[in-house]
Image (tube, rainbow, N blue to C red; front, side, top):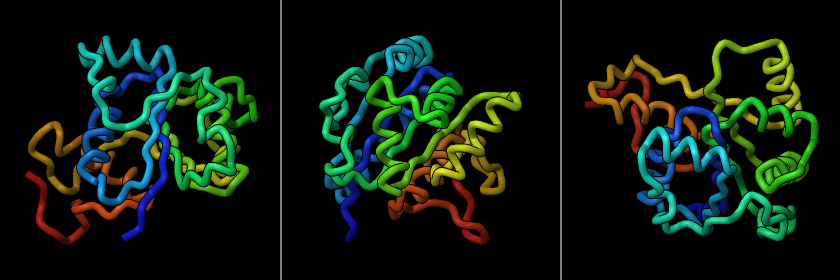
Length: 191
């Protein structure tokens, strides 16, 4: 079984519920994880508290780094991380990554993923999109990143909120290389 070395970043876009579910699912996939590191922007912490009414990310079993800690292992390509997931990803974070501005740990780690040709998955949650957003997405995609909008799928006919949100999280995990027990077209529907 492949053991993944990943970093998860949470920024201040609305959609903290996606980050919470991602962390929960990663805990359940611990046998597939070598290392999982976690970093929040200041706004990411504020939006989490506002939308979810808690700070449960502090209870996560994963190592938590400050966004100004440029000595974190994943700030260097020599650390050998396989993937980075930014969930949710603000348009400001996307813009900084697209322009190569690495003034904080999240942007620096994303820059490392791109330069090392590792997986960088940006879970954007903004709408509508301006031409600037679209061009930034194009730049990141051309550099090797993956734009994965937080757009739930309905073809599995999810009946509960978590099942609907899981359509996004399961796609993210699949893109990152994890083996998940998730809905596949032509199989039974979620409950």
